[in-house]
Image (cartoon, rainbow, N blue to C red; front, side, top):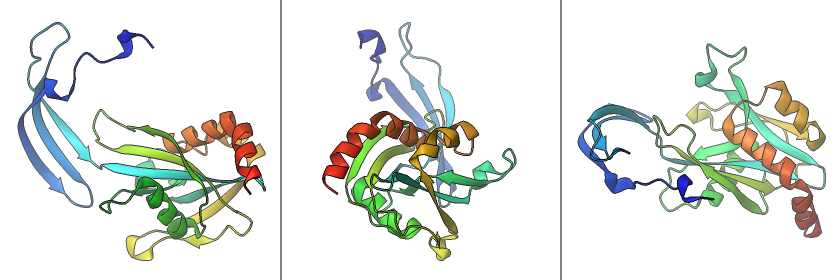
Amino acid sequence: MTNECVPPFQSDDVEILAKETPFRGFFRIDRLTLRHRAYEGGWAKPVVRELFVRGAAAAVLPYDPVRQEILLVEQFRVGALGWRDSPWCLELIAGIADKAGEAHADLVRREAIEEANIALAEVEKIYQYMPSPGGSDERLTVFIARADLSEAGGIYGQPDEGEDIRVVKVAFAQVPALLSSGLVDNAASIIALQWLQLHKIALDARWCAGA
């Protein structure tokens, strides 16, 4: 990697001139007036930016190396309403980091029980990324986990949180077709499935040896 890829500025090269919070609900929206350093020198003109405050979250792809299966969950997503034939989306198990001090690996273990009624064995971090840094502060950590999927299936979720979640098992051999179908169209799931395709041989050797 060359120095061209390293940003010339840091967080202290941004000055927050004003901050408002016009909406606060399950999530929050802040309106920031700010200025930042310019590439050609000095400060750029002040701009107003709305920020969707979502914070940290984590997601996990359960994988059974013995049965050669993965597990996804399907649920209604309001963000898919209006442009997609079905707003019921196939996704990874995921949750928001809303418990102080809870490690992200522990978060996905808890969510795996709540959303799919499965226990995770080894949990390994794949990647951490920002889904939409142009307007949100969300940071998503993606994991893969070894799991026994022999008894997986059913409908789960937290009814008091409006969750109605269907467990879907897929043979690993079907993953390329699943990705090509467009049925999986969210970044975290695509990242995890493509990562598994790239690293499956090494992962199988490691996990099946300890199974």
